[in-house]
Amino acid sequence: MKPITRIILFFVLASMAACTHQPQTKTYTYIDLSKFEDGIHHWNLYSRIRSGERFDTIDIVGIADNLLAYQNEDGGWPKNIDWLAKLDPDTVISDLSVHYRQSTFDNRNIFPQIEYLSAVYGQTGDEKYRAGAEKGFQYILNTEYPAGGWRGWDADVITFNDDVMTGIMYLLLDVKTNDPNYGWLKPEMHDKLLAAYERGLQVILKCQVEINGEKTAWCQQHDFNTYAPVQGRKYEHPSVTARESCDIILFLMRIEQPDSAIVEAIESSVAWLNKAKIEGYRYGDFPIEERPYHETTINFDREFVPDSTAKPVWARYYDLEKGEPFLSLIDGTIVYHLCDISFDRRVGYEWYGFWPEVVLKAYPEWKKRQ
Image 1 (cartoon, rainbow, N blue to C red):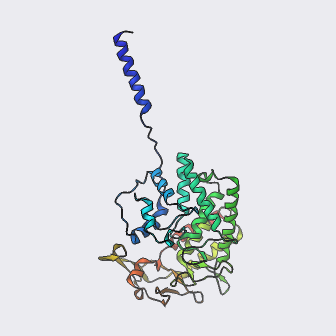
Image 2 (cartoon, one colour):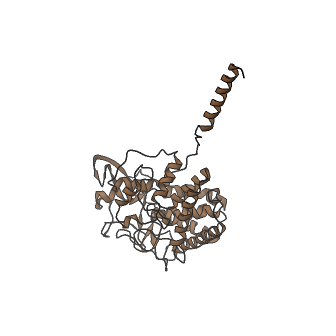
Image 3 (cartoon, one colour):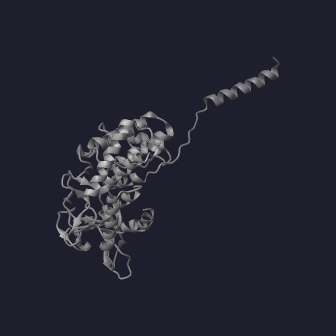
């Protein structure tokens, strides 16, 4: 072989070797993280642990591995974790009380992890993500009550707070409508999840509150046996609530080819929202000097004041007799003015809001489809 030929061959072989050993960089698609915002918000409020390092939002593998690191043996997850923080999970868990290490759907938890892990499995094909999602689904099945429905953190009752019921039901509706994200489900588990969905749907319809024979909307919590509105935390009285009811109505509107019971539930609850609106008052935030607030700081307060030009607003709670709006101190004492609520509770809880605007905007389009 001529010298020049040897030189050319050497460089060709060296180039091939370099290509062979060069690591392959996979590109993945961003997966929505918005459903984790509530848990991360509560982490920032209450956790004593802080981290400046966070996973990039497009690092779906790093985030998914972080989710798996916090998954409990029962298949669920503890609440109020910063899922994007680069922290040692054992250190984070050891800082929590035994009670707070438990799995719970509270603060929009568990169903987002299942959705995310399923989506990561769809992109990577890595079995550990499918297994994590499957364990999460099994947790949903194991914690469902016999007649249907799921509880939250604070009371052993059917819970609409924090999207406990609606968050799970949206996930199960995706399973029912054959979302590709869940095409990996085994037939037996798929059938069990569909049965859980049907029971949950009947629970939602049975919980709709009637006042003087007229259907209104829903309470935050309902009894598992009678479906009646019940107390949650001391300040969460039996009532009709605009906030959680809007989430329920939007869920029901997503159901294709709804039967007459679903249609009636939507029609009557939308009619109630129109009756329950409060006009002539302005609700919103106003700036204040920054002050300590739990483990962080806050620079606003909230007001509810007369203003004839303000758009309609809704209260969180309406009483079960006259349908009048009310508020509550943390000890359960009922009051009727936002100024009677302490600063921490004014800015830390949604006593008024504009949640029905989304429902009332979506309603005409839903009506056209029927």
